[in-house]
Amino acid sequence: MRGGTLTLTKATSAMVADGTFGSSGVASLGEAVDFINDIIALADGSLIVSATRGADQVLIKVTSTGVVASSITINSGAATGGGDIVLGSDGKIVVPYYDAGTCTLARYTDSLVLDNTFNSNNGSVSTAMTDSSVYCGVWQDTNDKYLAVGGGGSYNIARFDSAGVLDSGAGSMQLRLDGGGYASPDGSMRYAFTGLNAGGHYVEISGVPAGYTLTSPQVQNLNIATGGVASANFGLALQGSAVGAVFSDKDGDGLFDSGEQGISNVTITLKSADGLTVVSTTTTDANGGYSFTGIPEGNYLIVETDPSGSADTTPPNTVPVYVSSTGVTRLNFGDITSGNVYGVVFIDLNGNGTFDSGESGMTNVIVTIYDEYGVPVSMVRTDSDGAFSKALSAGTYFVEEQDPENFTSVSPNRVQVVLPVGGSASANFADKAVNTVTGFLYSDLNGNGIKDESEPGGIGGIDVTLDGVTVTTSANGFTCLPVLHREHTQLLPMLLQTLQILQTVRWFLLLQKMTRLP
Picture 1 (cartoon, rainbow, N blue to C red):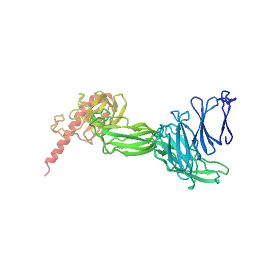
Picture 2 (cartoon, helix red, strand yellow):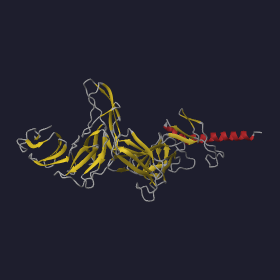
Picture 3 (cartoon, one colour):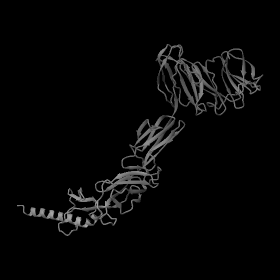
């Protein structure tokens, strides 16, 4: 309303005049004002009205039945802009007013008495705005902190806590159109540029106040049709931080205990909540500490990359966190020198389950390692000697061998091991051939049909054929031939003996030739 007597109309949620308010829902309060700036409702149903009367800015309290309870002047003779009202979570009322380059926030009780607990018994707090500011507004963020907003030629923000203490300092945030003109935001943080030509324009924001970060592009391009409108919104978020340490967890309990040391130069990555965007990356300092500061409030992932030769004791290495603007998010990562689970898969020729001299390891056999809950943590393959190994953190594991084709286990296929801190644990697997002829070609120098320790290793590269299937002995002389006819299993001792005799003759001829050399 502008000019005349202040009249208020109150309706129910069904948009029916509330008969309990004034006369049939309309209260003529006899207050002559020029402009109503804002109205808020208190918990008891009464209303607080901010209005301008001439050069004065006034507050009026109206009861729930439409009767004026009290009226005060909060700024006399210089009411320029402003007049918005904020009802704090404590039930107190904050009103801004502008005077000669200064934006003032005054706080009152619900009885319109100046609250002397605000700003060290002053009841109000002021901050300077730029000379071109012609507006003063107030807004309360989600952390019960008050933002004094000045607008006009520039857009200024100062933040105060609930006690009226300056929280982040006066800012000089500006909204500029096409690098020139400025907007004047209202108390709801809205701004507008009017009377623009059709076509392309851009709006730029600068001077984001301390304690906030911009969550939208700093410069936004617009295209305005003839007679049309376009919008460019800018988001501000309170900043938070995430800190922590990577430490050497000597006892493996996952806790950063007294006497345990930080680990330097470990990579820590901050990612978006979906893990698709890297927000920031850092490395730990000499004490193992890391920090991410100036982070917009929200959900993130913090990821540690384990140092070489280490395993984590505080799994997992990727941890979801919520970074709040009102505190510090803390997250530590414990690492330990990894232990080693190792073993060998071998052909158990004598079936005793022991890896004896003369027996050979089996290459490319799959070995799977599970944690104590049966969840697989690693799969490895044996090397050319039948060996396997895997670096893991301390704990209980199950090691399982997958029998190769044509072989069956002599020893259990699944073995439980306990890996101590920084130690090792072993698991060997003995296999024997099924429906195959196996054996070694070796140099039986003394012709006794037994491979003595003093005799050379097996001879590789020799073709052995059974039932039309030819297999070349491996580097250690081992061969494995499928038995296609059951009766040929009776030939196994004879075949092996023949192979040994042939090899003995071969070595005898070789030695005889060598003795004839001049």
